[in-house]
Length: 205
Image (cartoon, rainbow, N blue to C red; front, top):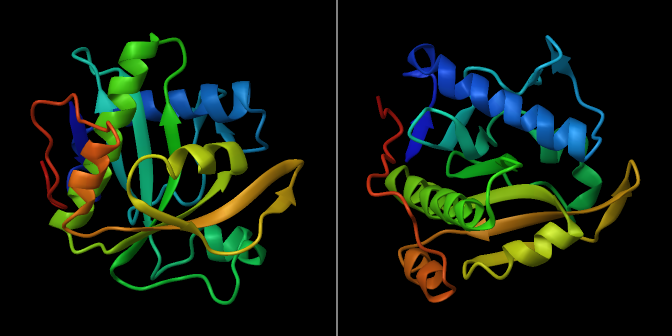
């Protein structure tokens, strides 16, 4: 099941948020060795995990984390303009209808089929959330091999500039355009949600 967590319901979703922050620590710090802050030696949390962040989290029946992404409004400082402006030709896109996707995370240790289902549910959820909330574009930063995968998902995804090397990683910036045809394009590419019920409203409880 996909859950949307933002400032309106964050206080009631501690278990799912804790599971997500724990998974982010296992993936980004333990596996990928990113130099990121750690809270209580268990959680990967940074200063962008504030009340302005929105989380899309795919959970299992027990409330465990399977996949997640963090959305940041580009009307406020985010990763692309704050940490990686050199990856963009010109000024990083910003506006009330442009959000930045960060911390796209798939839990390690789950089977390949469950991992694919969780990933696809999250991707469909990102598109549904954008359409339900007036978001026309997502931006982000990705390693080049992940960017190559992102471009196969069926949506309109392009780099915003030349790739660059940061802390030994080859990174590129990207922009994903979302419109009424995007769900059908994802479906044509084989991206289908495995969730029976997907809340997408910004104020989902």
